[in-house]
Image (tube, rainbow, N blue to C red; front, side, top):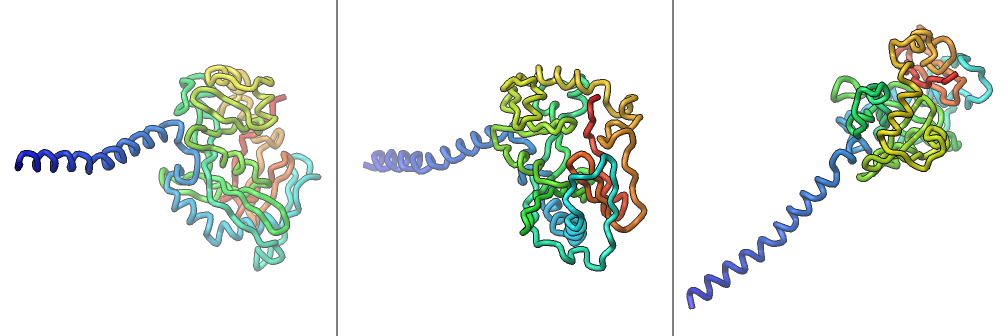
Amino acid sequence: MRDQRTSATRRAARFSRLPVTLALGASVLLSLGAGPAGAAKGPADLPNLQAALDTLKSTATHDAVCRFLSAPVPGGESPGAVVTLPAKADPCEGVPTFTIKDPVALNEIAPAFVAGTAQPTLTDAVKLAYAVAGVTTSAGRTATVLLAPTGTTGWHLAAVREGDTDATYAGKADLATTVFSEPQIHGYYQLKLTTVEPLNDAARQGLNGQPSVSLADYQKLVKGRYADKQPGSEYDTKGFSSGFGAGRPHSSTSSAPLVLGGSGAALAFVGGAVGLLRRRRARLR
């Protein structure tokens, strides 16, 4: 009788541990599912998310967005045009109310991948470029706040850009998909395992109209487009890689922000060089 009770007790103990075992197994599977393809895709994947949120919620960022929204919507300016905004004691005076969304990771193609010196793998093909946060106003205007990494754990305000395209496409990433941009042509792509698919018209043109290509074939395409236009090349040193024509924009010594027009993505420069974002909109000619 004692043996029967002992056996029953052992069976009950084994079954009581079964849910725990299954839960642990599910946890391992979920961890595996969020492997390399899940890297740098959303708010939780940003290094030190809290630091990014703190920067977005800071008074400096709020005032920078106000200064940016004080400028007229760009459209008629010639490339390289500079608009000086009037100084105001309250930068938010007369500015519509706005909301800054949570940041998401904006990935870009990596220089070594473009040069062909890196392997066509996810970890080598793209790099985290910015944390971006969409801005929406009560008047219907949209913008994007760009945060650049400070060291390995921090973030600082880099610029404010007209429109929320970067944040919208970056937000499409999920556990199975990595979204990245080819900023030189304003193209946005999604990478599923080793297949690259376009997300907008510029990306479709970048793939020569193909609905998808392998990551290795995509590397050949961008190497052909930019291998001779890397930093330090003649193309770069002559200033074409700034995207504003033959010269790079100069930082301002004024405390008032500047808005640079010309390529459809205006940048707000806060306190001169603080917001200076070197644009990588290389225009192929």
